[in-house]
Image (cartoon, rainbow, N blue to C red; front, side, top):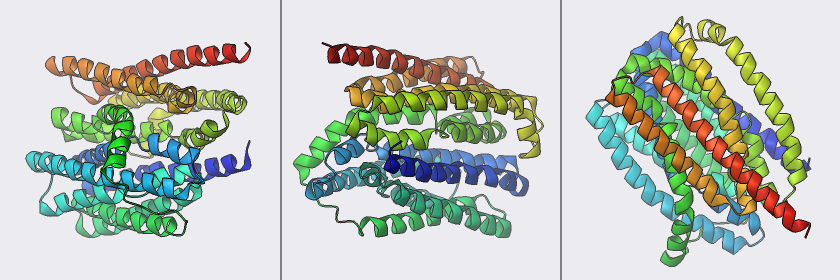
Length: 410
């Protein structure tokens, strides 16, 4: 494996560990101190924030990252891309903040202080230049500022919640830690020769339209990922939201086990088209993920009881379903943008997610009409969605790759 690729995988692995170990460590503490109902409220609010992050990301981790990776030596060009990304993000952040505040106020999840904290989180997280460091393949920088932010969030949350015993403290902590991440990321950014240059409305419009197709896919992703806990909380109550959130955090952690590899491999594969590395890593990761998912399913009951103090057969059922969904999600990610963009099939990667979200919406609506919304039913809908997307992408990759391979022999 290329040395730079290997280092990027290591850095991103550390990052993902921090991203999902920190919530898993906090959940038992928050459940014990605040109770399941107030923890459910935290989960719903942060679910909204995560959905906003996915939307404000606007697909730039694919579109802008690919453009920067292709022209990494053209400093002014990359600076213009940065400027366009920031301008678009500011507009989307404003819209997301308005929608999130209306939802929080309407549901009675918090007062003015919570609204300000949520707005701050949306802006501070969106403006961290992750797309830029991905493009120049400096994942170590991303790891440092995001891990620092996560560690600070954990420490501050424990201190504030222990003092106030209020769920709002966890939201304040997220706002402060997101600001810390933004400051560190900008410090790293300005140590590079690149800058954020306002490109003018024509380039902004061009970048907006180019990224729009990626955005539809990202918006679809937010529907059946981050908003699931909001969906459960709104229609089944905070107790169900709390139960679902615990299992969902394990699900998200499992989904992102191989994310560092895929994220690091994405710009590398675009630049080199080294399919030998792609297939070699797929063989290794496919077997590893299969064994890992099997082990987690076997000990799922013990995980819920020993770590989260949850003695519920329903929770065990939800976790088992979602762990199966982890493997489907892994296949979806590996044969998604990573495999399809180098084959000029980004539209299939985008459309597969949109189709999956449409299926999620249709089936979810039917379940709602029959009054069967619960943690278990939503888990089954997620599994169905992940399987549909993975199937579409794998079939598309096989057809596109074989076509390219056949042409190379002509």
